[in-house]
Image (tube, rainbow, N blue to C red; front, side, top):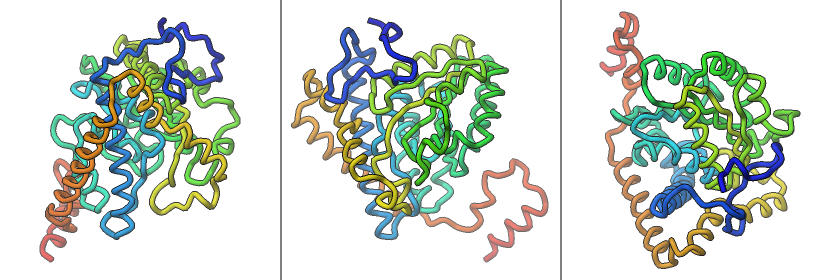
Length: 355
């Protein structure tokens, strides 16, 4: 059965993988077995990294960090629909799995959060724009990038991630309007995780779904269960096909939930109902896909234990490499800003370098 034939109300999110790890009747995952295990591995890697990053921040070895815990299926499912060799990811600050999928490294992610600008400079061939802390400021850039790629005749698309809170920024509306008019090959991936720091979703919009906004800009919007790897992947795959075919943008609202704090400076116990959190924890996307893999014989307990040990060592190695990296220096704030720095900037740069 094709995904398009799944009967559902447009205000109900597309769900293909139930919370108990079983698929809806008639659905066959489009991802082959090795890809499913690979996607699970990336989800588990980022969960492992989140836990270590929290520990490092509390020890004073890492700056403020925003975890992706609870949103792994949302980010991995969408990123897995892209071709890293030709497609681009334009992140906010909670999309580490998508950045890793594109070729970014854990070491560079750590360097960035240690305050070293080297960590936010992408290696050659890594189709990712730098992390953006200013809410929604990256969304117009994504549209411009997509529009430019199309004018270059490239068979590429761009996905940009932002949250429910960022969707209230004017940048999002201006970008979606331009994308609709220019039919830019861009996917607006809105992660509705329930909170904009401590502001709940109902204070961000009066609409029953963010996805409904797409119609006002002349392109499709789709609401998906963001804790369902399969649903997210299928919706994004269709959006990629649409972009490649020259049919323009798609808005995907991935309805998920933030299982931890907004970042390491946040205390969610001050505003999150503990009963609601416990209910949401039972919908953990990592547990959902793990249950499916176990039930279908694609993942044994022993294999998962080996995988976890490998991932723990991978994170530990990245920490060692980042902490052994050369320390940041003040002159780096001038690097990679101008192709030809004006005189005043060169003077400032020299004054810092001479210290």
